[in-house]
Image (tube, rainbow, N blue to C red; front, side):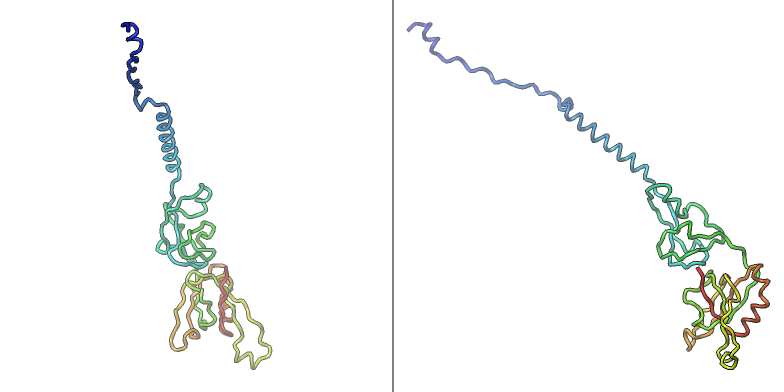
Length: 226
């Protein structure tokens, strides 16, 4: 066998193993796109959160009834995030002083945010204070200082029985502010007589003489008005 034939029958030597060039991972376009998307999302989220500012508004500490004065000691601050400025404007902000002498126009529940629409401006201070003696059952349980009431007089039952001409109940004072209410009590409980002091403004004072005459001829009943 010739040398040429021997070389022809020998297998060719194997090729060296190919190696792939590894580029830097930071140069991978897909990775760069992912980083940009994550950073952009974080920036947008931070911008949105920074725009959702909270507002300090007043809320009631306990349940309040219509006619009660609005005082800081009966309120607490609440930090609230509103959907828009229009919603925030519906409530009294705690960053401003409360309106002096303001009172409630409706009942407000405990913990409820204080609406601007439920707060009435200062009324004219009463010029006359009138004490009334009222049976406990003739005073609504919801009446307290700050309530607004109508004062009615019903015929004395003893006199009505002897006098068939006794007329119906009469409205003697209308829309007057309650300044103070005694608690009453004793053995008679709710039937015990209570003292209620009401305040009259200048226009109501003009009819006071006639009102006092009516009050002396019957039994007083208070009717709470909204």
